[in-house]
Length: 510
Ligand code: FAD
Ligand code: NAI
Image 1: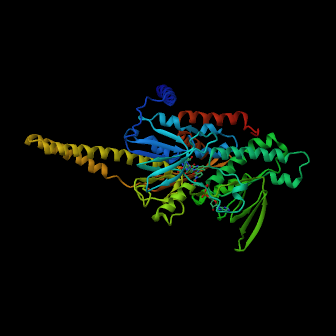
Image 2 (image 1 turned 45 degrees about the vertical axis):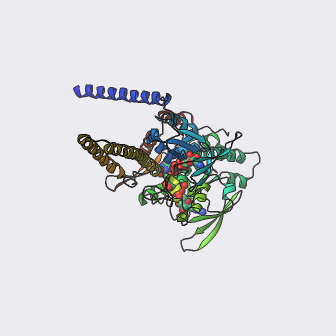
Image 3 (image 1 turned 135 degrees about the vertical axis):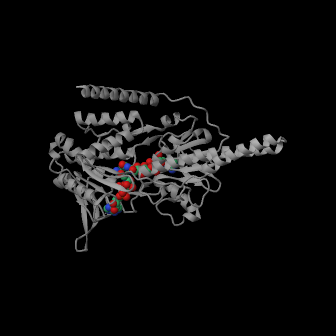
């Protein structure tokens, strides 16, 4: 009875602490702090992008030390891991967007933000060209901005490998607008398929949803789409129940090459049970408005061209560098061989430049282009900039003390100045010893549909744990909710999940 009493108290106490923490989070998010104005006489540090890398840098950097300017065509941070869920309305898009203004207003010293695309980087003159590419433009829509330090965190764009017809006919899945377009197209295909007197072949084509690319983006989207069909569409539109189907096309012999064998088999089996067709060893070569042309490698090694009529095509075959990055690569001789992105050294400095760093998907490193890597790189650069500022202040202090030491005649004063210099020099030596960037992999997680997820977790010194199924799905959910940017995001995501459980997904076409 005594144990029960204490357990009850413990639960009650924890709940109160949890509620207090939540309330504090809401309060903190709601009221921006008073800020010191930015100081243009300080060194100008320009940060390009408002994604995982740049925002993690912004969160940790002490903005008092620099005149920080952020440039991005997107005035918000996007929590990409939950983007596939926006394509079917499991999560509403605004639940995973966090306004950049909110992030910047919480810094101790003000940060300048320009909503613009950086179209050109001149690494020699140290000037950027910016263009307002939003719908509404003022008299000034293009200008330049000089910088002392530059961090490039512009991410990557979708690769099409130049395959004919992809750019014109496929949907991609990288930005909010992509998810909205897919959501609209799914419903458009369904409503068109059920149009009066629609032919059978056309109905079948329109209800065939094809995903190209068996990496995590393609797999997660295929899983979400099949959930939408199983849980809602077949109930709202029963006439499509026998014909709606999802296919996943992958050029390699299996999907999810970055996961362990056991999890690959689990995913392939789950997809089979859920009636998602996986076409491996199938490389798409051409696409037109209604058909995909792909080359299949058969078991005996021979190749065959097949045609796949489709209603919706989602293209998820990985990343390619953005135009501004490609242009910069051509301006730096030591980047001549770079293909995947800007080559950087161990400190993330762009090879062949000074005072220019790159992080996240736009940098070509030995790590996979993931949010995990970009976040850790952002945190590393924040430490680097904070240390650089500290180092500079110490150097100035030492120079001032040395001057004072020279000008003073008293032997005692000289001695005490010398010991002060020595103490500062010691701290300076320590802070100059910044280690190169080192990535700590915490594991990979992916949702594969039907309330199942897979996880390849890393803990300790290289220990791995592969886990899959519905418990892993609960783990996946709790990890991603806890990782959402703000308390507001966390609450909105949880409410979206509850809403879908209670009312089902919304099938109206916007
Ligand atoms: P991004 O986050 O893409 O940010 C780039 C920023 O640069 C954006 O703000 C963009 O608007 C801005 N920008 C673009 N062009 C310019 C320009 N010319 N000038 C200035 N700014 C510019 N990774 C994981 O680790 N786990 C996951 O579960 C996961 N899920 C994903 C799901 C999906 C659907 C996708 C597409 C990716 C997922 N990723 C995941 C990968 C992860 O999102 C990326 O690796 C990560 O976003 C890279 O961060 P970044 O800062 O380099 O670029
Ligand atoms: P990816 O590069 O991981 O996978 C693309 C797949 O497309 C490859 O397997 C490739 O073989 C296939 N492909 C290429 N050309 C093809 C063709 N013509 N026909 C058929 N198949 C073709 O790309 P993805 O999934 O967009 O991921 C990009 C990055 O984002 C990766 O680093 C990934 O790890 C990360 N990411 C991580 C997630 C997670 O951890 N849950 C979720 C989504 C993305």
